Length: 278
Image (tube, rainbow, N blue to C red; front, top):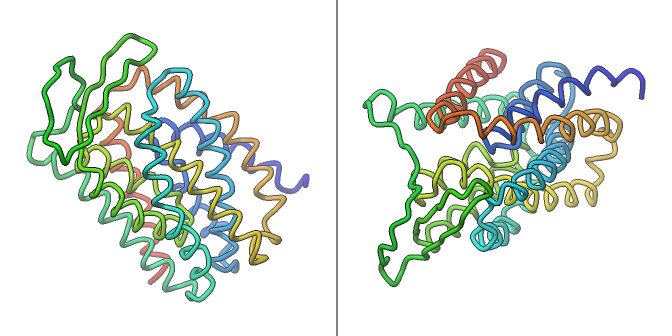
């Protein structure tokens, strides 16, 4: 175990930043492990990262629960929708060659980065939809309203059918790549489902905890997790300590900084992975 102690500070950084942006940190950890362990199979890498994402998301969920920013009803709906895809994604990773995995992973997160930066280039970044208005929504939309620990009222509505459909796909992609899905779910919650940014990041952590747990249990059942227990332990200690820090920092960081920071980080990681794949 001593040889893996250096992974604790790595996990701390992943936990803090991942919780700040609601992405679970898997998009940082996967490429890091791909670089550190070039001989490991994608299945081993994703089994480690999913387990770490679970501990990170669980710790972040506890912190955000105290801030009363989690929309539990929506979180449960979307978490349930991710389960079938999460199981399938964890199983199919074993059948993908390492180089192809790197290439697809790099292209995926680069696409997400570009999507997030488009509002910045157009000069119309999204600010969230915090509101005290009681506007009545159409019958096919689900209206949500919550007041966080600071007294700020968040009111918004969305089409649950769209959220459920996308969550099924996200469940598959997140466990296939071992990223937890936050880098996809957060933009979906904000841009397509009208969630305020801080509610989206908090609710995403709740969804991630359930989804990552499903993927981890699947990896344990298939035996893929056996090679990563000690590395997961060290990283889990780090992310558990770092996640509450990220939640605290979220109170001091503007919405646009969170989104733009996520986009820039994704672009840098994507370029490095694509270089490695070629």
